[in-house]
Length: 274
Ligand SMILES: Nc1ncnc2c1ncn2[C@@H]1O[C@H](COP(=O)(O)OP(=O)(O)OP(=O)(O)O)[C@@H](O)[C@H]1O
Ligand SMILES: [Mg+2]
Image (cartoon, rainbow, N blue to C red; front, side, top):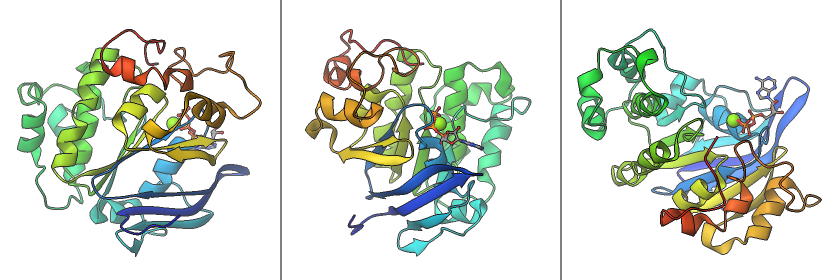
């Protein structure tokens, strides 16, 4: 893949968890101002990819390059300083700390830039008034917002978002995704992972599908057919029975074509996100 103009480049990344090879020669290039979406079924390697980019897993081989600088062997805190911040799957807040204390965790090693606590409080109108509440007292959507805020106060150049929609009601997911244009406008580039394919198709300018740790499809959402996405998501031998559908019903590939309909707020075939 030509990485000309890429802010974040992943070059033939292979990652193991013990004996298990979780990623095999995965490459991607995210250009500034883009939303690059990674889709794939449970266990496809999506979180492993984001975590390896953030420095939380070691690469067996391959490279992670930020703005031309090779960070493959840099520890996570160095990558954070360089501008890579992760919003991890499942939020991972400190439940007994307050909202503000959780946000302050993100200020450690922060770059300078537009996002400080005040900017996050202005992005999420409800948050300042609840800054002294413990994270455990927040709803799932509120916790997701704090997790995003915690990553933002590091002033990342590239924000890695792992399954923002996990366990949230559709209206909450919609509100969270409505933030993305604002983040892009403030200069943040986004690499997101979604199991909800229709959501990823709406949000991303490029889509990449992983299957068993390998890239099976890449392209612009509007250029990918439902059949292509299904084949890439499930593997070629599976045909549309939905037997292996992602948890929560066909929020997966079958919903891809219904994405435009869902975007207009009409009931689709996607069902609720997990
Ligand atoms: N820390 C770990 N130790 C051992 N195996 C792991 C570890 N993390 C992930 N794996 C395995 O690596 C593979 C990829 O997992 P990963 O969590 O990256 O997938 P995923 O696409 O994020 O899945 P999900 O949609 O369920 O979040 C799976 O087979 C998983 O069981
Ligand atoms: Mg995952």
